[in-house]
Amino acid sequence: MNYLDTVVQGVLLGGLYALFAAGLSLVFGIMRLVNLAHGDLIVLAAYLLLITASVLGLSPFVAAAAVAPLMFGIGWLLQRHVLGRTLGADILPPLLVTFGLSIALQNALLQGFSADSRRLNSGALATASIDLGPVSVGVLPLLTFASAIVVIIALNQLFYRTELGRAFRATSDDADTARLMGIQPQRIFSGATAIAMLVVTIAALYLGTRANFDPSIGPARLIYAFEAVIIGGLGSLWGTLAGGITIGLAQTIGAAINPEWQILSGHIAFLLVLLLKPRGLFPRAFD
Amino acid sequence: MCLLKTNRLAAHYNDFQALFAVDLHLDAGETVAIIGANGAGKTTLLRSLCGALANAPEQIVFDGEPVGALSAEQVVRRGIAMVPEGRKLFPSLSVEENLQIGGYAGGAGGFWNLAKLYELFPVLGERRRQPATRLSGGQQQMVAIGRALMSNPKVLLCDEISLGLAPAVIRDIYNALPGIRSQGAGVILVEQDISRALSAANRFYCIMEGRVTLSGEPENASRDAIHDAYFGVGA
Image 1: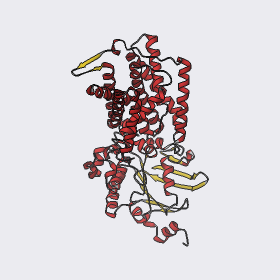
Image 2: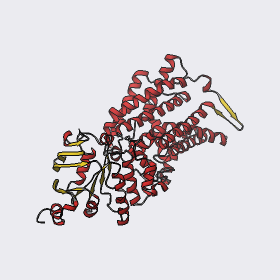
Image 3: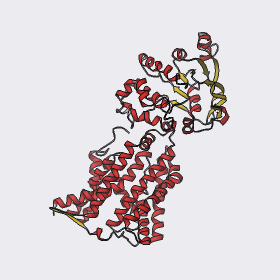
Image 4: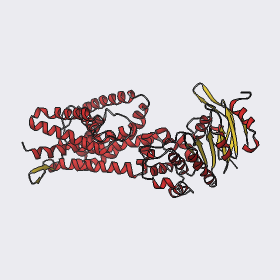
């Protein structure tokens, strides 16, 4: 096998997993909410992209500009009216409600779109590649990786350079004291979930253009996202990218050795990190 | 001019009544001390005033408007800022960010801003980039006070600002109070350190078991009267 090629493909695949994970990481980081429907929300966004692109005859990349605000609104309303009600001292209600949401979403998508697997048609882009000396890389994987980096830089800027970001971090630290500053935690949480849904839209764009999807694949994407977040260390977005790359690398290397080992290798890499560095590669200084 | 007034304020935690018909008032530019033993209801009183605890609307009147039922995030926008007990700084935020978040409720363009606070507490300017929780206790208290001032409040509520601090540090913090008051803000000090609170206050209220047992001006109150009001008559 071509080692360099395997490594490059693995790193680029990691970009996709980092995109899956960034929204999850954002929501968990701010409100300690584990959204078990995250993967299904990505699939939902992929179907919204599919409808918009096919009905209006647009490229999925253009359709994303229309779907992103829609997902933003869905995220806001979901947090405001459903997820927000589950937050509290007890960690069980958010898990149960998002688990239920996951099942409901899968079945609604199954009802609406059947179990046929679909794909977003990105035209010539789907097969385009760039020759980089010893390896040749696909344009789509490269775009995915670049998007992951842009998303992480943008989220970091938002977090550490804006007033909203300060309010996010303060609310995450201590919602009661944040209220004393005039911050409304509920609005902060709604904003966070809405922003996470923007990232979900971008993740869905690459999920759908790179491979086939059907209503049932959400939970597996959730697992990859989870593993990326935990490998990276909770609360660190660059860590999430590192986590995504770790899983991407493990999967591609595993698949190069034996195609049956692809998924398993990712999980084994995750377990190894948990064993050796239980708090992840880049843990926060405090928690 | 009366800035803040409570009308027979009663506060409850579920079935437990923590305050009974408390009447007090605060004028602009005035410092009022609330003294009382542990569990007397001092913190409950402040939590009611800052909106963390909901009351009947007309039980708290601020600037002529009933604010008793408003939430904490609404109250701070009206101009009542709180320095909570234990400081409660945000650990993810630097010193400067902790101060900046104090201005989230508005108040920009008032007297207090970052530059003015670094003048008041120069050490904060030197350490502005550090995580707030890396500072000493006294410096953290300065951040907590500065954070509350950033909204340019008309009323500053201070809950136990000397708790756990060395006497020299307490003196530094109390020395900053006249400067805060001179900007027209009324200050309510809740303290267990009676002599410290009384020496800084224009007036005081002593609370015991949820009721005001004594009030007046520190110079006109005898030690015995304060002692009785603090511990209960005949104690």
